[in-house]
Length: 186
Image 1 (cartoon, helix red, strand yellow):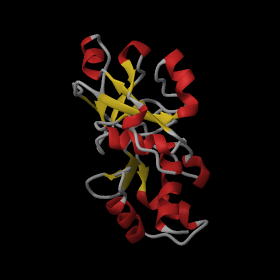
Image 2 (cartoon, rainbow, N blue to C red):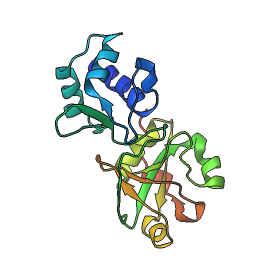
Image 3 (cartoon, rainbow, N blue to C red):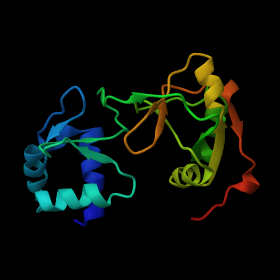
Image 4 (cartoon, rainbow, N blue to C red):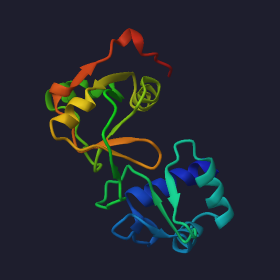
């Protein structure tokens, strides 16, 4: 497996299925590094040096070590109930959400909901939201009136890697970005 494939496997383990390699996460999403390495080693050669390289070079900064590097966790994106000790913050006035065109009808009816995840993920810029949206086909970008939501009592959190999170975004806080402003690269 390439480091990129292993990184995706680690994301699956630490966000969704720790039991797939026979480990468990604590209430804050931490897994023992030794257990993670041993579990991955059951199917592919893997060591601490490779894990440190993946954490250091991951362009999305998906993972964090504790201070002595004995524990590791995913920074966000969990579908299993964990408290990753997110910092509650006042959001910027506007945030963005990128999705695929196939989800627009549902979003326009229900707003943004986390589906299988614990939170809705929001970006500070259109470029990042577009990249996220492209993972789901032709991208559609929503502008989120985040500060107004906050003023109306909604809580916002920021993950260690700079992703803004909230439990949901009702439709009255959403606005489509003009499609001409959003590039589409397959």
